[in-house]
Length: 342
Ligand code: PEP
Ligand code: MN
Image 1 (cartoon, rainbow, N blue to C red):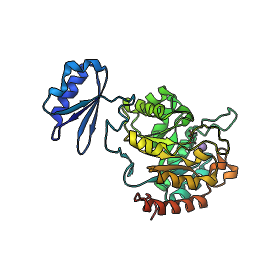
Image 2: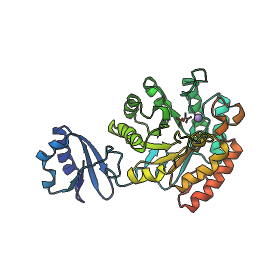
Image 3: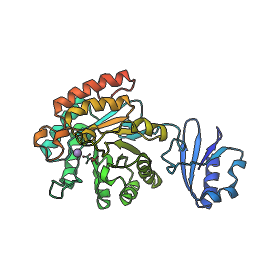
């Protein structure tokens, strides 16, 4: 349920309602917009009647949120969420590109890629240090050594770091190095991991599960917000369908659907979404045209030698060409590409 306060309501009014709600066992979340202050209350709705909040002079209305997701919904927060990360902002007037290898393979591979993507205009460096692999015999990641290389690359280039955390036991370690924590598709409904990540004061990129519905995905984001982490971004990375030509089916309709239902930013991953590097640039463009707030793209200096996802990785020159194309498109969309002159 949301409690919309009248214009001009101040801290004292918010405090009074918060106290009353908490006494009745509600969890309270505040959304302070420029226009309106909205208090979100999650708890037993039957206890609401006794509070009679609508009788308070500074309450405009009390509205139940009928959807199962509450804090994630546009009703709770009508204005777009913007997520401040370092000196960047995701979900604002500019779009961002996060780029880098699927996996951190070595110091030289990472640093070379980092310099190349920075030069082409990326603002974030991606790279997995813990890799969720289909086969237990595949490369599992350099773990903390990989995190150290990511931190070194940040030092050298100024790029912010996004990297995946796969296990509750590693949350603190990964958070000590990363600027953004990535929850991988296979872990979207690992609720214990979501709860741990929610406790950390780091933005989260929540990938869509390979067979997750929109509602299940939004409920996963709800776990993060309910746990206290409001800096959540969705990431569409394709879903499992009958099609085998592409690795996954990139469901770009989720971009406007999420923007309609939720205030959180939406990022698109055309690399995992297609599995073929030739399709990455066209789908990246389509994602921006659909309103994505950013992209996450795999880049490798030698894709044919990559230990994972070489087929979907762009070479640095191809990445540069894509960024130039995207800059032109995003200028036309009136949503400049951060890091590149349009
Ligand atoms: C990745 O980003 O390298 C990755 C493993 O992605 P996903 O979780 O979407 O499969
Ligand atoms: Mn990958």
